[in-house]
Length: 527
Figure 1 (cartoon, helix red, strand yellow):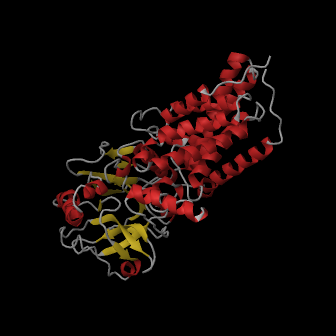
Figure 2 (spheres, helix red, strand yellow):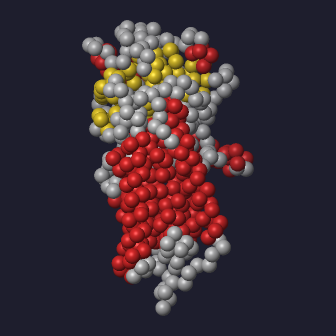
Figure 3 (cartoon, one colour):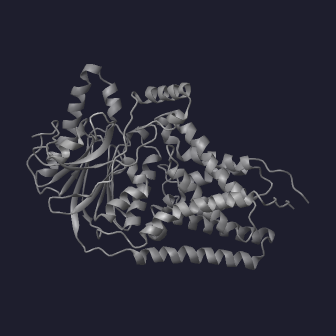
């Protein structure tokens, strides 16, 4: 007997359930629930009576909730994330709805991993947040598979496990598929998850026990709001006050006794644009810091802008500063720019009138129209004691490539300088910490996050959060500092680096293949 067409309540509920499992500030410990949420998603997408727009609705519901903090920056950007993001779940729906029962769990795993990778790497509109593997950042012991195949493999394994569980539940309730087949499928998924998780931990190289004393300063203010609160002619003086009170003074305290090897300040700590040629020649200095800090063996790493050529747009960068001269010893450049915040996505593809309108929207929301240039991959920096470390800027942390490149060149520590005050303490912050956990695991290398107002933390090479400053969105009454002895990584990536880089493109190819094959199959008749 053919049933009626179901309504859209279940897709909405499944999307919201998946959003609850995604890292957020209001329910941070729901990670393992992602398996149950993905099982509900699989059940919805496999119902042959459901139109494709139900899959799109499910994806939009998921994106709308976990990306809500973006609306603090620009409501239009949040709406576009939701409307475009739903298309990736629509693709998964189209890929799996026609698969045979036997192949559906594996097909769902491939389609899920492929859609997440495409969303994270789509030119101009990349959005790597909210992937299933990120939900397990509190339980890094379950994420060993990222050492084998990166984030896409972990996403696929979670999807496979969830789809097998949903198939087992369907067999128990309805007798379809046969119970024995469902049990064998669930056992295969559990064995695959367990084996690849264990393999990752076995492949992780052992460190030598060395550690580095690192301190960070979290200033705790939203710079744009602080400057908007004073008359224009007072803006420069107000910035100097904040620099002295929230960054220089806490650093003086850190250096007063036994200084750490590194002191980190967040992204955009000092408004300066330094010519790369001057840095290379050893002539670049940060005038705002000269002689304001005592002479020390510690080295200061902070965020500024650099310029490749005189007529080039700026590039956000981390610079390594000698004390007290404020001479720049070296720098690293931001490789992954933030869509909207550092360049305007899609403008070059639009008609002139539409481009002008979009640029006006961004300029009105951000107070300016930033147009930055992506940076180059440079060798790791080195502490005064010769320890190589990589500096990542903000969005670099969201993608595997920049961190992996630094570790491949010998970095034993990764430092992330970021400014996330735009999100006002929203779910964006734990999502970026979750990404830091994955970067540390992928590379077997510890990572230190220094942010403007949270979430600042130290992540060990095994993905555990070793130290942190409790999340406290700006404005805060004073700066906070965090100091830790960080066990160093081995200075080399775990084996299978080529496989980790290839799993995402392979999953995307698999998704496309499923979509092409699905168009040639007829939908089964619902009974």
